[in-house]
Structure formats: C-alpha cells, structure tokens
Image 1 (tube, rainbow, N blue to C red):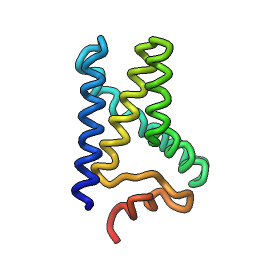
Image 2 (image 1 turned 60 degrees about the vertical axis):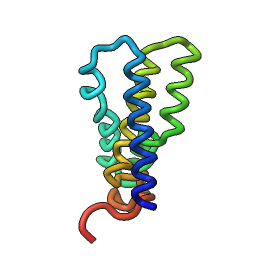
Image 3 (image 1 turned 90 degrees about the vertical axis):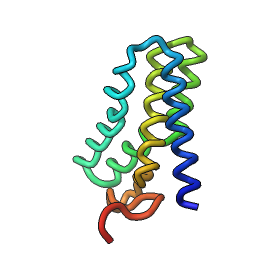
Image 4 (image 1 turned 120 degrees about the horizontal axis):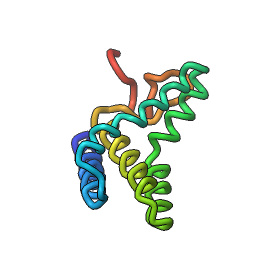
Length: 117
C-alpha cells in the first residue's frame, strides 16, 4: 500500500510539473520555488501548535487547489504558479514521508513519525 500511495503522490508531482509547463515562466522558476513552502516552518519559532497550523496550511492540497482554482478564475498566472508550486511541493513531501503535522511535535505526522524510532 505504501508504494501505491507514493505512486499517487508521484502522479500529482508530475501533474504539477505538467501544469507549470503550460505557464509562460522560465524552466528554472519551478526548481527555484519548489522548496519555498517550507518557509512555513518559521511558525515553529513561536510554538508547536502555531507551527503545525501554519505548516499544515501551506502543505494542505486543498490550499493548493483553492489557490490554483482562484488563479484560473482570475486569469492570474502568479496565483496559478503559487498553486502549482504548493501542489508539487506537498506531493514531493509526501513521497519522502513528510506529512501534515500534529501540534504536539514536528516529527509527529499523519503519515507516522519522522526520523529514527
């Protein structure tokens, strides 16, 4: 099952690359922006509850889809780009086992624990 879920995430990452390819941005923009959603970890400087909320907001696929949809609706390529990056980043994170965070600990995710057990 784990491999099947990773394949699903890989499909979503490939979809984000395809969608990016439809935009009129230089190719280097995608790899330059793909890790930007991890800036949301700054919330952990306050506490784990705020950190988890901010991190999860920027790593939730519904957020990505909402921003992507808003971008298409408003015909705004910057919003479309943001949605594509959020979708691709979230899928990439899930491939590597980084899930949405629980508020008790950064290493406690919906996919299980991160790191050594």
